[in-house]
Length: 318
Image 1: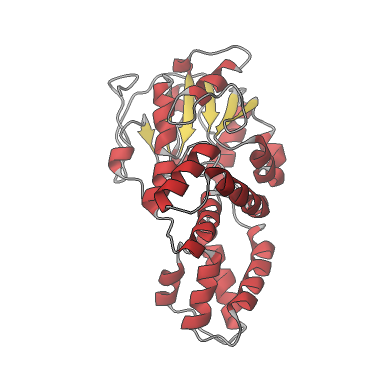
Image 2: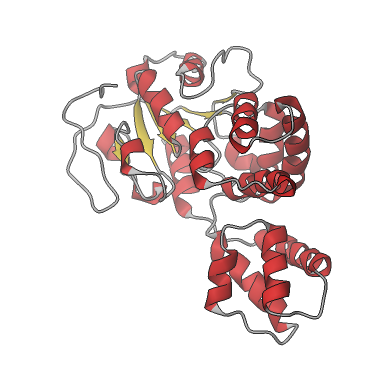
């Protein structure tokens, strides 16, 4: 798929390059993994469903379904993990579990140190150390698996269920205080302050968005409109098809041309959709996303904090 302009260069994972970009007037944001730190919660929920069947939700599977709409993602997960469930059954189970945890999601906080502190403090109550080898062992595992490893490896005088219950209570107390990565909130408020039209284009459905944005209503009210792919009848095909971004552009009052729109994404499927729509795409990928899957992006950043609005003809940060 060709770029919108041949002079653009991508910022890779190892350093920056000078580039010239097309001027834009409107911005469209993905939500999960870009504005809201929900990806770890989705991973935990999916693994909790897969675990009783002896299956592992690997990064390779996760990467392949990032950005897909709910039903498409469910079909892909059931097929990849060979689960003895229909896609409809998977959606029902996962929706119930996701809704129970999504109210805790924060605006892209640096949560790993918080989780480590929660577990460290909890282990201190048992007079137990938290060795690095054990920390590495639990990284990326589900809550249930984390607690099982800790109880067994550290020989704690409690059951896994007891430790899990304590961990979840402490989680609720601490995650609400998570520090916000300023890139997401600063950029949204900056664009709104300078009257740059902004929209949300997420593969999530309306019910899911309502749950996930509950704690950040004021910020999400700054968007001109929201397109929620899994429940919007005008979005016929999910990412990597361009539908969601074309619908988002069409709902701005002045109906900008695709070339006037800049998309912010974290997922390869989302970037592919944006470029297919004829838009430029700023990608802020998970560090595990391979270089091959970043190459279609107009520019790749480590964080939204690194975004320079003036590169795209937008008002610079002051």
